[in-house]
Length: 312
Image 1 (cartoon, rainbow, N blue to C red):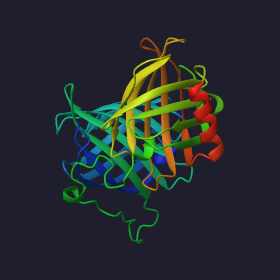
Image 2 (cartoon, rainbow, N blue to C red):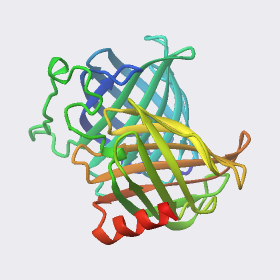
Image 3 (tube, helix red, strand yellow):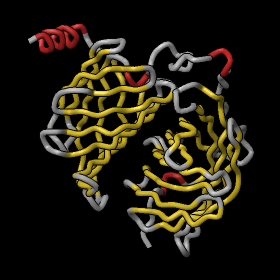
Image 4 (cartoon, rainbow, N blue to C red):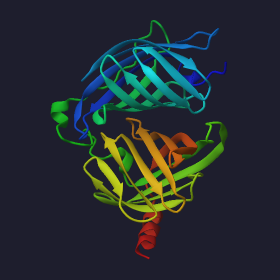
């Protein structure tokens, strides 16, 4: 049996940021996971403990089928698509809590850090948005990695979680190579992706090249609290952000009639973000792309050129 998501095997400890549907910070969660694989069967066993605004602990097993995994319970049931050996996109259920989850997790190229984003619902009602960052606990007797806790009372209604800006939606450039996968999630190559955002406040302009599954796009967006939407033009849709660090949304490329389900998680450092693009025609998946993009400020020349182009 082929093995997928091999980068996730090991001991992990992390700190999550938990938000309510409006984007208000509820508190940190301490997350620990022990991930083991049975070499004879290929099955994975996970012992998990999460302590925060909600609590969860127990064990579940996973049957690996290469391009996807089946969560077999008892703590967690569901299905996860795997993209290479370091990315999963899951739809799963936590019966003990009566909650369902849409989940994206990436092990970064270093192999020592993971970024994740979960949208947790009961029925169609969103209950929590959970932004996770975990470090590999490499040695049995070493001190576990530590994270700085955040105070919900101090953060209050600040949708940037005290950072002063939405890290994902800053003016600047995100760039990096995305791994490409076909409709069966088989690898087909790489594409250089560049996202440029111009402007600040409620109105911004975004340019994206290297999407591969559609042509390049340029569109205007309106920011409203922790949501963003593109109301006009050839690329329309909307997304929701958590703490300015993670976002999930759906967009339609009207010219190509292809729908994008976009999920992304920014590291707490603000320097890099994990990205997952799933492309559909109707409900039929046509391809995917995933990778790490790195942030940089715009140069003065870029700002000037963007201003001339936008005014033309």
